Amino acid sequence: MTFFSKKENQISRGTPGYEETENRTPKAGYILLLAMFAASLFFGWRAIDDLQNVPEKPESLSFCASPFRAYSWEDSWRGHYNYYPSSQPYYIEENSYVSETRECVFSSYEKKYGIPAVFEKRKQLDEALGASTQALYNIVNQLLPEAERQYNLGLQEKIARQEKQLYPIPSTSGQIENFRIQKSELEAKIAKLKSELQPYDEQLKTLYQSVMRDYRKAWRLYEFKVFLLESLFVFPFFLLVFWLYRKLLAKNSPYTIIATALVGVASVLMLRILLVWMWSLFLARIIQTIWEFIQNFALLKSLVFYSGMVLSILLFGGAVYLLQKRIFDPRRVAIRRLRDKQCPNCQTSLDVAIGFCPNCGRKLKETCSKCGEERWADFPSCPHCGGKKDY
Image 1 (tube, rainbow, N blue to C red):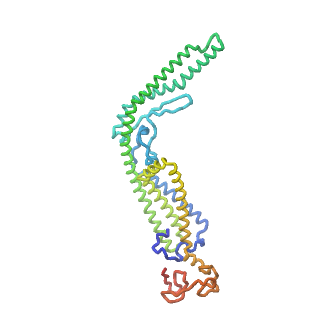
Image 2: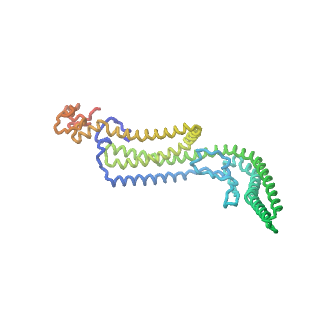
Image 3: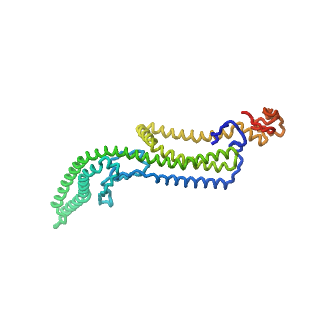
Protein backbone atom coordinates (compact mmCIF):
# COMPACT_ATOMS: atom_id res chain seq x y z
CA MET A 1 0.00 0.00 0.00
CA THR A 2 2.95 2.30 -0.38
CA PHE A 3 1.33 3.85 -3.44
CA PHE A 4 -0.43 6.22 -0.99
CA SER A 5 2.95 7.71 -0.08
CA LYS A 6 3.36 11.43 -0.72
CA LYS A 7 7.01 11.08 -1.80
CA GLU A 8 6.82 8.30 -4.33
CA ASN A 9 10.36 8.79 -5.66
CA GLN A 10 12.19 8.85 -2.34
CA ILE A 11 14.18 5.67 -1.70
CA SER A 12 15.43 5.06 1.82
CA ARG A 13 15.99 2.30 4.34
CA GLY A 14 12.46 2.96 5.62
CA THR A 15 10.90 2.19 2.24
CA PRO A 16 9.46 -1.35 1.85
CA GLY A 17 11.46 -3.39 -0.62
CA TYR A 18 14.84 -1.98 0.44
CA GLU A 19 15.84 -4.98 2.55
CA GLU A 20 13.51 -7.63 1.21
CA THR A 21 15.90 -10.40 2.31
CA GLU A 22 15.90 -9.31 5.97
CA ASN A 23 13.73 -11.66 8.00
CA ARG A 24 12.68 -9.80 11.14
CA THR A 25 9.61 -11.97 11.87
CA PRO A 26 10.03 -15.65 12.84
CA LYS A 27 7.93 -18.40 11.32
CA ALA A 28 5.90 -18.70 14.50
CA GLY A 29 5.02 -15.03 14.11
CA TYR A 30 3.68 -15.60 10.59
CA ILE A 31 1.64 -18.57 11.81
CA LEU A 32 0.14 -16.47 14.61
CA LEU A 33 -0.56 -13.61 12.19
CA LEU A 34 -2.33 -16.01 9.84
CA ALA A 35 -4.40 -17.33 12.75
CA MET A 36 -5.22 -13.75 13.78
CA PHE A 37 -6.26 -12.90 10.22
CA ALA A 38 -8.50 -15.98 9.91
CA ALA A 39 -10.11 -15.52 13.35
CA SER A 40 -10.65 -11.78 12.89
CA LEU A 41 -12.16 -12.31 9.46
CA PHE A 42 -14.43 -15.10 10.74
CA PHE A 43 -15.81 -13.14 13.69
CA GLY A 44 -16.04 -9.93 11.65
CA TRP A 45 -17.96 -11.79 8.93
CA ARG A 46 -20.35 -13.28 11.48
CA ALA A 47 -20.84 -9.89 13.09
CA ILE A 48 -21.83 -8.41 9.72
CA ASP A 49 -24.23 -11.32 9.14
CA ASP A 50 -25.91 -10.64 12.48
CA LEU A 51 -26.29 -6.94 11.64
CA GLN A 52 -28.64 -7.96 8.83
CA ASN A 53 -31.21 -8.98 11.45
CA VAL A 54 -31.34 -5.51 13.05
CA PRO A 55 -33.51 -3.70 10.44
CA GLU A 56 -36.94 -5.21 9.86
CA LYS A 57 -37.03 -7.34 6.73
CA PRO A 58 -39.87 -7.06 4.20
CA GLU A 59 -42.70 -9.57 4.50
CA SER A 60 -42.23 -12.84 2.66
CA LEU A 61 -44.57 -13.42 -0.26
CA SER A 62 -47.01 -16.30 -0.24
CA PHE A 63 -45.73 -19.54 -1.76
CA CYS A 64 -48.64 -19.19 -4.22
CA ALA A 65 -46.66 -16.42 -5.91
CA SER A 66 -44.15 -18.89 -7.36
CA PRO A 67 -45.94 -19.81 -10.64
CA PHE A 68 -46.79 -16.19 -11.43
CA ARG A 69 -43.80 -14.06 -10.49
CA ALA A 70 -40.98 -13.25 -12.93
CA TYR A 71 -37.56 -14.53 -11.87
CA SER A 72 -34.70 -12.07 -11.67
CA TRP A 73 -31.02 -12.29 -10.73
CA GLU A 74 -31.78 -9.59 -8.22
CA ASP A 75 -33.90 -12.12 -6.30
CA SER A 76 -31.61 -15.12 -6.68
CA TRP A 77 -29.32 -14.56 -3.69
CA ARG A 78 -31.88 -13.29 -1.19
CA GLY A 79 -33.48 -16.63 -0.48
CA HIS A 80 -36.62 -15.16 1.07
CA TYR A 81 -39.14 -16.38 -1.48
CA ASN A 82 -41.06 -19.64 -1.15
CA TYR A 83 -41.07 -21.43 -4.50
CA TYR A 84 -44.06 -23.75 -4.07
CA PRO A 85 -47.22 -23.74 -6.25
CA SER A 86 -50.62 -23.67 -4.56
CA SER A 87 -51.30 -27.26 -5.65
CA GLN A 88 -48.08 -29.23 -5.81
CA PRO A 89 -48.21 -32.84 -7.09
CA TYR A 90 -45.50 -35.27 -6.10
CA TYR A 91 -44.88 -39.04 -6.15
CA ILE A 92 -44.45 -41.00 -2.93
CA GLU A 93 -44.15 -44.47 -4.45
CA GLU A 94 -43.94 -45.80 -7.97
CA ASN A 95 -47.71 -46.18 -8.47
CA SER A 96 -49.14 -43.66 -6.02
CA TYR A 97 -49.95 -40.00 -6.53
CA VAL A 98 -50.75 -37.35 -3.94
CA SER A 99 -51.79 -33.75 -4.56
CA GLU A 100 -50.88 -31.52 -1.66
CA THR A 101 -52.82 -28.28 -1.24
CA ARG A 102 -51.42 -25.65 1.11
CA GLU A 103 -53.10 -22.58 2.48
CA CYS A 104 -51.79 -19.36 0.94
CA VAL A 105 -50.92 -16.71 3.53
CA PHE A 106 -50.86 -13.53 1.47
CA SER A 107 -48.58 -10.62 2.32
CA SER A 108 -49.63 -6.97 2.41
CA TYR A 109 -47.98 -6.48 -1.00
CA GLU A 110 -50.32 -9.08 -2.53
CA LYS A 111 -53.39 -7.79 -0.70
CA LYS A 112 -52.69 -4.29 -2.00
CA TYR A 113 -53.38 -5.44 -5.58
CA GLY A 114 -56.36 -7.70 -4.80
CA ILE A 115 -54.56 -10.96 -5.45
CA PRO A 116 -56.41 -12.98 -2.72
CA ALA A 117 -59.75 -12.29 -4.46
CA VAL A 118 -58.39 -13.54 -7.80
CA PHE A 119 -57.03 -16.67 -6.14
CA GLU A 120 -60.42 -17.29 -4.53
CA LYS A 121 -62.13 -17.11 -7.93
CA ARG A 122 -59.75 -19.62 -9.48
CA LYS A 123 -59.75 -21.88 -6.41
CA GLN A 124 -62.77 -24.01 -7.50
CA LEU A 125 -61.34 -24.44 -10.99
CA ASP A 126 -57.97 -25.35 -9.52
CA GLU A 127 -59.52 -27.94 -7.19
CA ALA A 128 -61.56 -29.43 -10.04
CA LEU A 129 -58.42 -29.59 -12.17
CA GLY A 130 -56.57 -31.34 -9.37
CA ALA A 131 -59.38 -33.90 -8.90
CA SER A 132 -59.62 -34.56 -12.63
CA THR A 133 -55.85 -34.91 -12.92
CA GLN A 134 -55.90 -37.38 -10.00
CA ALA A 135 -58.65 -39.41 -11.62
CA LEU A 136 -56.88 -39.45 -14.98
CA TYR A 137 -53.68 -40.56 -13.28
CA ASN A 138 -55.50 -43.44 -11.59
CA ILE A 139 -57.05 -44.59 -14.87
CA VAL A 140 -53.89 -44.28 -16.95
CA ASN A 141 -51.48 -45.75 -14.42
CA GLN A 142 -53.60 -48.17 -12.41
CA LEU A 143 -57.10 -49.14 -13.65
CA LEU A 144 -56.50 -49.31 -17.40
CA PRO A 145 -53.18 -51.25 -17.16
CA GLU A 146 -54.83 -53.73 -14.78
CA ALA A 147 -57.82 -54.23 -17.11
CA GLU A 148 -55.49 -54.75 -20.09
CA ARG A 149 -53.47 -57.26 -18.07
CA GLN A 150 -56.64 -59.21 -17.23
CA TYR A 151 -57.75 -59.09 -20.86
CA ASN A 152 -54.41 -60.55 -22.01
CA LEU A 153 -54.69 -63.31 -19.39
CA GLY A 154 -58.20 -64.05 -20.65
CA LEU A 155 -56.84 -64.41 -24.18
CA GLN A 156 -54.20 -66.82 -22.90
CA GLU A 157 -56.90 -68.84 -21.10
CA LYS A 158 -58.97 -68.95 -24.30
CA ILE A 159 -55.99 -70.13 -26.34
CA ALA A 160 -55.33 -72.79 -23.69
CA ARG A 161 -59.04 -73.83 -24.00
CA GLN A 162 -59.71 -73.71 -20.30
CA GLU A 163 -63.30 -74.64 -19.47
CA LYS A 164 -63.64 -72.12 -16.67
CA GLN A 165 -61.93 -68.78 -17.35
CA LEU A 166 -60.87 -66.62 -14.40
CA TYR A 167 -60.72 -63.57 -16.64
CA PRO A 168 -63.71 -63.53 -19.00
CA ILE A 169 -62.89 -61.63 -22.17
CA PRO A 170 -66.25 -59.84 -22.67
CA SER A 171 -66.27 -58.25 -19.22
CA THR A 172 -62.63 -57.19 -19.28
CA SER A 173 -63.05 -55.85 -22.82
CA GLY A 174 -66.00 -53.79 -21.62
CA GLN A 175 -63.94 -52.43 -18.73
CA ILE A 176 -61.14 -51.40 -21.07
CA GLU A 177 -63.56 -49.60 -23.36
CA ASN A 178 -65.19 -47.88 -20.39
CA PHE A 179 -61.84 -46.74 -19.00
CA ARG A 180 -60.81 -45.41 -22.41
CA ILE A 181 -64.01 -43.41 -22.66
CA GLN A 182 -63.45 -42.01 -19.15
CA LYS A 183 -59.86 -41.16 -20.11
CA SER A 184 -61.02 -39.21 -23.16
CA GLU A 185 -63.68 -37.40 -21.13
CA LEU A 186 -61.18 -36.50 -18.41
CA GLU A 187 -58.62 -35.26 -20.93
CA ALA A 188 -61.27 -33.04 -22.51
CA LYS A 189 -62.37 -31.80 -19.07
CA ILE A 190 -58.78 -31.05 -18.04
CA ALA A 191 -58.16 -29.15 -21.28
CA LYS A 192 -61.35 -27.12 -20.68
CA LEU A 193 -60.40 -26.37 -17.05
CA LYS A 194 -56.92 -25.24 -18.13
CA SER A 195 -58.42 -22.91 -20.73
CA GLU A 196 -60.74 -21.47 -18.06
CA LEU A 197 -57.80 -21.03 -15.68
CA GLN A 198 -55.70 -19.27 -18.33
CA PRO A 199 -57.34 -15.80 -17.94
CA TYR A 200 -56.89 -15.93 -14.16
CA ASP A 201 -53.25 -16.98 -14.53
CA GLU A 202 -52.55 -14.16 -16.98
CA GLN A 203 -54.24 -11.71 -14.62
CA LEU A 204 -52.15 -12.95 -11.70
CA LYS A 205 -48.93 -12.67 -13.72
CA THR A 206 -49.81 -9.05 -14.52
CA LEU A 207 -50.65 -8.28 -10.88
CA TYR A 208 -47.47 -9.93 -9.62
CA GLN A 209 -45.40 -7.66 -11.83
CA SER A 210 -46.64 -4.74 -9.71
CA VAL A 211 -46.19 -6.76 -6.53
CA MET A 212 -42.59 -7.60 -7.37
CA ARG A 213 -41.86 -3.98 -8.24
CA ASP A 214 -43.00 -2.86 -4.77
CA TYR A 215 -41.36 -5.85 -3.12
CA ARG A 216 -37.96 -5.18 -4.70
CA LYS A 217 -38.18 -1.52 -3.67
CA ALA A 218 -38.80 -2.63 -0.09
CA TRP A 219 -35.82 -4.97 -0.27
CA ARG A 220 -33.55 -2.27 -1.69
CA LEU A 221 -34.53 0.05 1.17
CA TYR A 222 -33.83 -2.71 3.68
CA GLU A 223 -30.48 -3.47 2.07
CA PHE A 224 -29.54 0.21 2.14
CA LYS A 225 -30.28 0.33 5.88
CA VAL A 226 -28.13 -2.76 6.37
CA PHE A 227 -25.36 -1.16 4.30
CA LEU A 228 -25.40 1.99 6.43
CA LEU A 229 -25.38 -0.04 9.64
CA GLU A 230 -22.51 -2.24 8.44
CA SER A 231 -20.61 0.86 7.26
CA LEU A 232 -20.76 2.31 10.78
CA PHE A 233 -18.89 -0.75 12.00
CA VAL A 234 -16.51 -1.47 9.13
CA PHE A 235 -15.42 1.89 7.68
CA PRO A 236 -14.16 3.41 10.99
CA PHE A 237 -12.30 0.16 11.68
CA PHE A 238 -10.70 0.30 8.23
CA LEU A 239 -9.67 3.96 8.63
CA LEU A 240 -8.24 3.28 12.09
CA VAL A 241 -6.11 0.29 11.08
CA PHE A 242 -5.03 1.98 7.85
CA TRP A 243 -3.91 5.07 9.82
CA LEU A 244 -2.03 2.76 12.20
CA TYR A 245 -0.43 0.98 9.24
CA ARG A 246 0.73 4.27 7.70
CA LYS A 247 2.10 5.46 11.03
CA LEU A 248 4.09 2.28 11.68
CA LEU A 249 5.26 2.14 8.07
CA ALA A 250 6.68 5.66 8.29
CA LYS A 251 8.75 4.57 11.29
CA ASN A 252 9.82 1.33 9.63
CA SER A 253 8.41 -0.38 12.71
CA PRO A 254 8.69 -4.16 13.11
CA TYR A 255 5.03 -4.11 14.14
CA THR A 256 3.91 -2.92 10.69
CA ILE A 257 3.18 -6.52 9.72
CA ILE A 258 0.46 -6.71 12.41
CA ALA A 259 -1.21 -3.59 11.06
CA THR A 260 -0.91 -5.03 7.54
CA ALA A 261 -2.89 -8.12 8.56
CA LEU A 262 -5.55 -5.90 10.18
CA VAL A 263 -5.79 -3.80 7.02
CA GLY A 264 -6.32 -7.03 5.08
CA VAL A 265 -9.21 -8.04 7.37
CA ALA A 266 -10.80 -4.59 7.18
CA SER A 267 -10.39 -4.50 3.40
CA VAL A 268 -12.11 -7.87 2.92
CA LEU A 269 -15.04 -6.84 5.14
CA MET A 270 -15.37 -3.47 3.43
CA LEU A 271 -15.24 -5.08 -0.01
CA ARG A 272 -17.92 -7.53 1.03
CA ILE A 273 -20.47 -4.93 2.16
CA LEU A 274 -19.82 -2.78 -0.90
CA LEU A 275 -20.23 -5.66 -3.36
CA VAL A 276 -23.35 -7.01 -1.64
CA TRP A 277 -25.03 -3.62 -1.72
CA MET A 278 -24.01 -2.85 -5.30
CA TRP A 279 -25.15 -6.33 -6.40
CA SER A 280 -28.75 -5.64 -5.41
CA LEU A 281 -28.54 -2.04 -6.62
CA PHE A 282 -27.36 -2.54 -10.20
CA LEU A 283 -24.75 -5.29 -10.63
CA ALA A 284 -27.29 -8.13 -10.79
CA ARG A 285 -29.29 -6.44 -13.56
CA ILE A 286 -26.15 -5.60 -15.54
CA ILE A 287 -24.83 -9.16 -15.31
CA GLN A 288 -28.22 -10.61 -16.23
CA THR A 289 -28.48 -8.37 -19.32
CA ILE A 290 -24.94 -9.16 -20.44
CA TRP A 291 -25.35 -12.90 -19.84
CA GLU A 292 -28.63 -13.06 -21.78
CA PHE A 293 -26.94 -11.29 -24.67
CA ILE A 294 -23.91 -13.57 -24.55
CA GLN A 295 -25.99 -16.77 -24.54
CA ASN A 296 -27.37 -15.90 -27.97
CA PHE A 297 -23.91 -16.03 -29.53
CA ALA A 298 -21.77 -19.15 -29.03
CA LEU A 299 -18.62 -17.47 -30.32
CA LEU A 300 -19.12 -14.50 -28.02
CA LYS A 301 -19.53 -16.86 -25.07
CA SER A 302 -16.19 -18.49 -25.88
CA LEU A 303 -14.58 -15.07 -26.21
CA VAL A 304 -15.87 -14.12 -22.76
CA PHE A 305 -14.18 -17.09 -21.11
CA TYR A 306 -11.04 -16.50 -23.16
CA SER A 307 -11.09 -12.86 -22.04
CA GLY A 308 -11.44 -14.08 -18.45
CA MET A 309 -8.26 -16.09 -18.87
CA VAL A 310 -6.42 -13.09 -20.33
CA LEU A 311 -7.78 -10.81 -17.60
CA SER A 312 -6.62 -13.17 -14.85
CA ILE A 313 -3.14 -13.22 -16.40
CA LEU A 314 -3.05 -9.44 -16.62
CA LEU A 315 -4.43 -9.00 -13.10
CA PHE A 316 -2.22 -11.42 -11.18
CA GLY A 317 0.77 -11.24 -13.49
CA GLY A 318 0.54 -7.46 -13.52
CA ALA A 319 0.43 -7.36 -9.73
CA VAL A 320 3.60 -9.45 -9.52
CA TYR A 321 5.23 -7.27 -12.20
CA LEU A 322 4.49 -4.04 -10.30
CA LEU A 323 5.76 -5.58 -7.06
CA GLN A 324 8.97 -6.78 -8.67
CA LYS A 325 9.42 -3.46 -10.46
CA ARG A 326 9.18 -1.59 -7.17
CA ILE A 327 11.48 -3.93 -5.25
CA PHE A 328 14.08 -4.02 -8.00
CA ASP A 329 14.09 -0.30 -8.64
CA PRO A 330 17.70 0.61 -9.69
CA ARG A 331 18.09 2.86 -6.64
CA ARG A 332 16.98 0.09 -4.27
CA VAL A 333 19.30 -2.35 -6.01
CA ALA A 334 22.17 0.13 -5.68
CA ILE A 335 21.57 0.60 -1.94
CA ARG A 336 21.38 -3.16 -1.32
CA ARG A 337 24.64 -3.75 -3.20
CA LEU A 338 26.42 -0.91 -1.39
CA ARG A 339 25.29 -2.43 1.89
CA ASP A 340 27.10 -5.61 0.84
CA LYS A 341 30.14 -3.54 -0.23
CA GLN A 342 29.54 -4.18 -3.92
CA CYS A 343 29.49 -1.91 -6.93
CA PRO A 344 25.88 -0.84 -7.65
CA ASN A 345 26.49 -1.50 -11.35
CA CYS A 346 28.62 -4.65 -11.67
CA GLN A 347 28.73 -6.00 -8.07
CA THR A 348 32.55 -5.81 -7.92
CA SER A 349 33.94 -5.66 -4.38
CA LEU A 350 34.52 -2.08 -3.22
CA ASP A 351 37.34 -2.95 -0.82
CA VAL A 352 39.84 -1.61 -3.38
CA ALA A 353 37.63 1.27 -4.61
CA ILE A 354 37.91 4.95 -3.64
CA GLY A 355 35.67 7.20 -5.72
CA PHE A 356 35.03 4.99 -8.72
CA CYS A 357 34.49 1.27 -9.35
CA PRO A 358 37.81 -0.25 -10.50
CA ASN A 359 35.95 -2.64 -12.80
CA CYS A 360 33.25 -0.64 -14.62
CA GLY A 361 34.23 2.92 -13.66
CA ARG A 362 30.91 3.70 -11.99
CA LYS A 363 31.04 6.92 -9.91
CA LEU A 364 30.51 5.95 -6.28
CA LYS A 365 30.88 9.24 -4.39
CA GLU A 366 29.87 12.86 -4.94
CA THR A 367 29.97 16.21 -3.16
CA CYS A 368 27.07 16.95 -0.80
CA SER A 369 25.13 20.00 -1.95
CA LYS A 370 24.39 20.92 1.68
CA CYS A 371 27.76 20.71 3.46
CA GLY A 372 30.25 20.19 0.63
CA GLU A 373 31.63 16.96 2.12
CA GLU A 374 32.11 13.78 0.13
CA ARG A 375 29.19 11.36 0.35
CA TRP A 376 28.01 8.12 -1.29
CA ALA A 377 26.14 8.92 -4.49
CA ASP A 378 23.40 6.29 -4.09
CA PHE A 379 22.45 6.74 -0.44
CA PRO A 380 19.59 9.17 0.28
CA SER A 381 21.24 11.00 3.21
CA CYS A 382 24.66 12.57 3.73
CA PRO A 383 26.68 10.86 6.52
CA HIS A 384 28.20 14.24 7.53
CA CYS A 385 25.18 16.59 7.74
CA GLY A 386 22.21 14.24 7.28
CA GLY A 387 20.93 16.25 4.34
CA LYS A 388 18.51 14.48 2.01
CA LYS A 389 19.44 13.99 -1.60
CA ASP A 390 17.26 15.64 -4.24
CA TYR A 391 16.19 13.01 -6.78
